[in-house]
Length: 348
Image 1 (cartoon, rainbow, N blue to C red):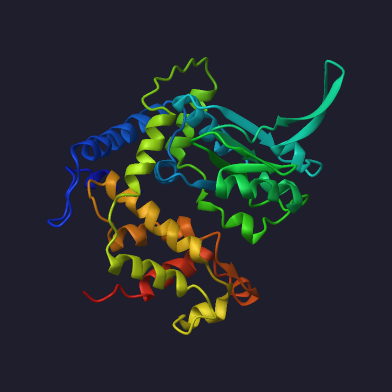
Image 2 (cartoon, helix red, strand yellow):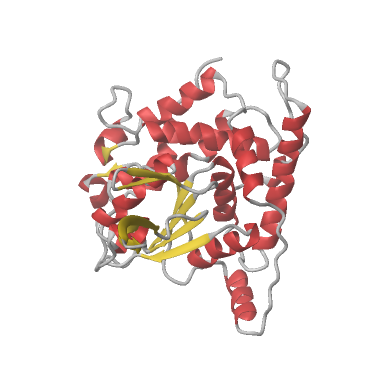
């Protein structure tokens, strides 16, 4: 994220805050692990620094990501490389119009043993650590909804039996924002399960030249594995113990609330351009992701700046614009930027 590396100093804990030696060790390990992960990913992924930084935050916060970009910008490669570096179980589902929910979560089959028949649940590809939902918007909402329970509750219920998911568990979904033929819009309930929506754009010329040079010659890449699944779970645990002042939580709630045109405090441009604003999960994700960002920047408290820096990835898929915004060619990023500029931080 912009300016992130420049703030990587020794943790700055407030006078009233304290942290155990074990937590301090974990915080330092998180910062070191982030740098090591970035170094390994850079062996394959060129550029896209903001996207990779935000992906790291979601990883350490335990959130899912929706990654949007035109074909050929390494969306799938980024996710596959992350799984390789972490040595986590990885499954890829190519979402197509004929994909069924059972193809995702699994199905029951009849099993015969010693002359007796019984039903056995065969787990689907969703039972993994990192699930790549490739081109998720190419399958109907019925199949998309098969992910809902797993993404929210880390479990799958089939035939009345609940099956726990592996830990950690991440859904990293990709979609093509340009080609609309043969695609289905993601339901709001599905979109809301993603902590971030990340946007991958074209590379600058020099970085694109480097990609072309690297991918058109014999190249054998070997990864080291600085972190594992247990490390990620520990980072998620310590991140939730980072304090967030009441004023910072109030600011996050007000920022999200101001995105709703029904809110009495919504700015005029929200009432004019927005059909539906962000919900409660947006406030929760702003604070949780802010806690991770604070740790990675060497702070043990969430600041207003953390909330502002994370507003776009958290809100861009949760704000639904109306036809007035479309007619005036107003994008959701512009709405979010104006929202951040308009909503004041609480006094004191």
